Image (cartoon, rainbow, N blue to C red):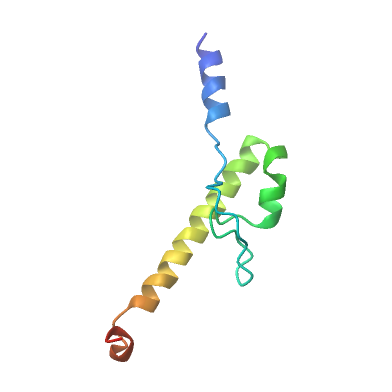
Length: 84
């Protein structure tokens, strides 16, 4: 009985990262909404759960890199930028 519950949890455990903001960024090759590559988007429906989790892991890394990049651009180390 618990195996069936675990199975249901596994199926629901890997949702699509799509947030319906579908625009590819030419400089990164990532969707601006979900941060997936075009190959990850195209293959999503055929990926097994392990592959989907790997995509989620990549998205987390991309998001962290994106946020670090944003923080470095907002750093007031350059006063002329901070005063604008």
